[in-house]
Length: 373
Length: 266
Image (cartoon, rainbow over all chains, first blue to last red; front, side, top):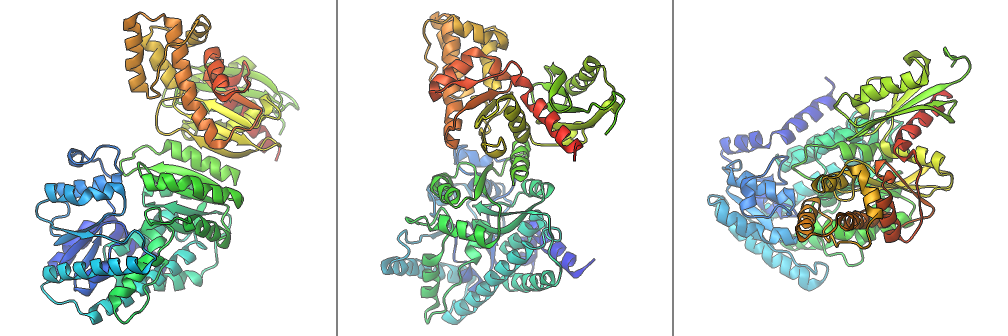
């Protein structure tokens, strides 16, 4: 097995078995804190010597969560709540829940009622995130969270701890972008499902180790000749980690040249500025993030960024992986698609759901899209 | 590319849908030598019957066929196929041949609906598909016909007898079913209910068309194109004339056969 395959297999195993990662972490005497989407301050968890554990749900049938959420709430939240209620997340010392969308606003309350043994850390960010008052508000919330995490960790979280964590996270973000760029040139070596798994593994492992592996992977890929004969696309949306979906991309020789997926490169694209008070740097980063429907974005910078990404990547189209029942995504779709249309870039929208078992309609749509390109 | 029938080139298109299997044999990429429609789709004996039937009708054997392209929901499981294309591409190719110059194609199938945009040259340029919902599809009409104790093929004639429309406000199959039952309980004449059903389905389909921006001329393909009441309601909702063909249900299979012919020539 080549070193490339070795790293891919290692990261794929981690991303497909998050519970094993959590168990190993707990067995090593390390505490873990669940981190829900979007853009929670993982660095503070890391700075406290605990393991941040990404919670983007799972492909599963939800039953218990329906007592708390109606069926038309996105399946990411449904499945996270289901995992919590059914004890699959036992061992977490806390869960960070933000209020980024209307559905998330009820999540903390639902969690507190239904999962008694994992306390909630509320994550409130400023809506007007780019103005000074917004930065100040976000910083005040981050300081509050820092105190809550210190209590859970049973130790102080110093500025130096946070600065060191920021450095680790910045390195991992740079490594993710470098890897995504390299994967976009090597779809045969890193098909879509593996590409997703490599990035996703970071949710469940030490980010310093993740950065190290991704940096090595990107360097190894750079030494390989690029693969030709693929249809290059940019993906956008909240989440695109379904192996069944990504295998359909592979069947149709579709290469993800770049992404604007919240769970992939969106977070990685923005570094935390190094500031004297690292909390201020983290709050400023939230103001700089772009490319996600849950971020207040009155100028629809997301559309401009997406079109630019597609042009830079030499993409023949954009695939919008539309999370079912996600209002912010549905609202963004119309103006952003118009921007892509104006730029002459095709957009294919695929509605996906964590509870999907039948992908035949998507298979037809992707095949037709590939036939058009 | 010689074959047992001399210099003629025969190609076959198989459209294996969710509700029906359709096969077309084309002679030299232009003349429809034979066609079959079996009311049984993917995962049944329908595809094999449609395939054997079309060969028998054309008086040909498998080895006389230069190339076979499969399309439709069951395209990947049709073992006789040399090539496979999506039903969207197949309908686009077929519609461009059936309706030269067509720019918008509305394909209403058994369990999904699609709107295709073609370039002036007749090439598929964009498309939208319905959400995972039966509203606005052939399945919606089948469910409604069953409640009314009608065969789905009778809906068009029944619509023509209506003097007015019974309001069916919901586009959801399940809720519309309740409304139809309520209308029956009130004693509303069946033709009026049928017209209401068509108008309800037309609203749903038209909203899909509007997501693409309607470019004329437009045509309807798929089995539902045989339903005059549905075509009337959809044309009224969209405010335009819609082209149909007696062979509309064969459009996907025809497009697949034409695709096979083009590939056979390469």
